[in-house]
Image 1 (cartoon, rainbow, N blue to C red):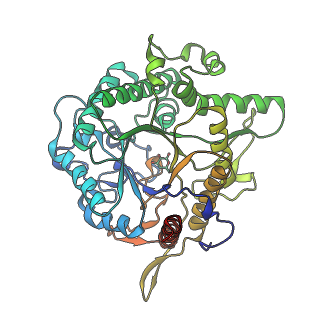
Image 2: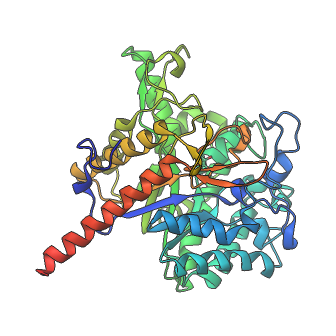
Image 3: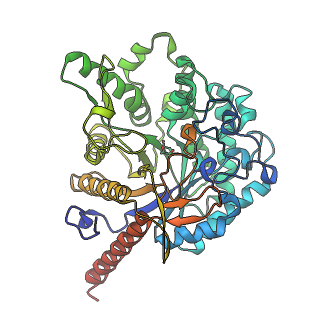
Length: 461
Ligand code: FCB
């Protein structure tokens, strides 16, 4: 797709709209034992036989820890406004409580300063899943004590970096931590117990609210919020059973997070459905959870379709699929964003992750390696257009970030699934910008030229 393609409504983006690219600590950093880093639950989980599809781990990953400067140059070369990264909690506080690790923090100081030197705004996430194993050993997110440990960690980070990072996200995708980590057990820490999962979800939300309150009391200037993975959830057919099943799934995956955050209450239908698996909620918890945020982040990859009989499958839906087997549904993003705007009163809204895995081929050309990942470019361009459409329909969108800067450790799928706009050769760790990187770079240039034209026009210059 060409940036000037009419399908692509450039005019729809506000002048201060934030364009970004995202990664997370465990997926790219490697250096699993360097400079006093503690063990995370993902380090431990990777060692469980069968947990990771290709038997891999995050020990080296993209070795971003040792290649920071050249990776910063890749981000700089893209021309993004913002870089979203996460901090490895066990790198800066090996046991999750007690002593902080100055050497670990120094890595993030170099990262933040390197971004600022390149004119890129740092967006920091405190928890993108790599909880210190030492905290898991005392109950992990199922234990209320972990909530207080998180708040102390958040305060330490904000005190050291808050002046330099524009935005701090407490948690990335609490649904994934709770459900995939503690109900299905597909992700770390690999627990399979629904009641535990619901307690974890509650503690994540509670720690988010308490962290917001503590950071504000400390005078933190960064904008504060959370990032949720959300999809529009629809029924496979218009049978009453499918409609009811879809409504319940919307409750479990969307309203279970949005309602407490923005209405101060858990959805009654899901609460009733959970029976004995409801979480323990102490008086005052919901008032804390509903502490106002400065932004809300949403990660979008695909839609959800639910059939009561379980008969529906993405493989036979007729929609194109990514290498994850996820349907490509850009209009689902517009549907999701407009629904959120309709059903809740929202702060400025960002898409904090959006992208696709495809099987890429690195080809040699006289000009060097190239990856002709047309499908990925197409995916990103159409989803950006879908955000433009949401803006045209009145949704207060503030930014969009591509997942991901580079190919990386895709959790239980290991290294086989490539989401990057930069190719990583895992044997040599060499980076090669894919065509999607080049396209996004040109697109951003175009955006900036338009901003400039608007500014010049507005000032009459
Ligand atoms: C999201 C995660 C991110 C990445 C993408 C593909 O759920 O936040 O780390 O794995 O999926």
